[in-house]
Image (cartoon, rainbow, N blue to C red; front, side, top):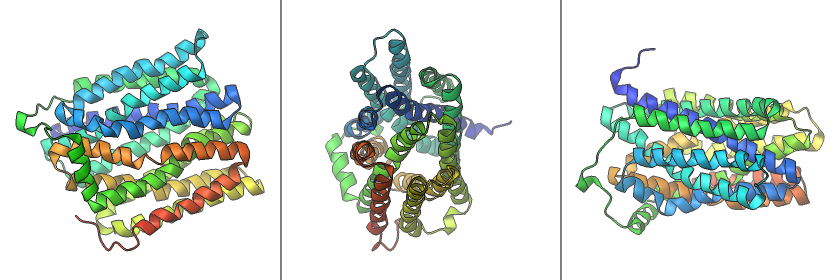
Length: 400
């Protein structure tokens, strides 16, 4: 298929992103599945997943500064290389009897320490390539979100199939290879963008954080995302894999559930890509958390009343539909409001802020699964999702 010259670098970035995100989805599913299988403890599985999520908070304190000072491409390449070795070490060490929970947690932590700035760097590359080639911003961001949603569909389905066929350890080997492929695509497919001395980031990182905190709508978006991620990440990375395994190693059902969620996000992303300019971002920010809450309530009722498992897929499709627009609203607002010389630092700081609730959500989920079960946990999470809707209750419009 012919790709217009001005879209070629952007297309290479989208392909690299897709491959990397598919690999990350495989890890998200394989790690808790593996830990719960060998330990039988949801709390222990939550702790290992917690180790992988903690860097999402910590790296925002410094990683953006390096992206702005050096280049997004260099940071992305370095992240992919080290991530390749960190993920590959898990199955290698286990196969020779040298992997325990401490080492596993450390490797998962190391992987995410480097994956988080790498992901942020690729987010910075999106507006850089849009500006460099004068691409239509809404359309380019729409393509980026569609590729992300497509990866979210492929990844879970592929994970379910591969776990059933080759097991979770070989799944991690496959994941490691995706980082290597992403490295090669970005290395050869995206040209270097050399910044002049005046374009480089010279302000201390704390100055950037103060600037971000003073932007009320960016701060509100961060708080809004914090609460939603505190529920969504434990649901996808811990609750569903453990619940599927408790039913008897139903990896195929897990893949169906996760793919249903991703199909839901893809549907709303597609709609927003083409008619988003006619929709009210404020209305979406208010009503979509309520839709997510309803999806969790349906899952709770499915478990409580022993409904057929396809109801979980239906609920996750609805949950995904109401979650899919958020990332596009975030991206467009940040790209418009953040100066180019601060994008790396602000994007990283925003990413750090929006993940601060995830470790708490993971630990609460693990403890509640072990102590009181899935239904009370899902009811609590469903109730929490009402709060993000209230955050925007008095806001009348978003700045363009």
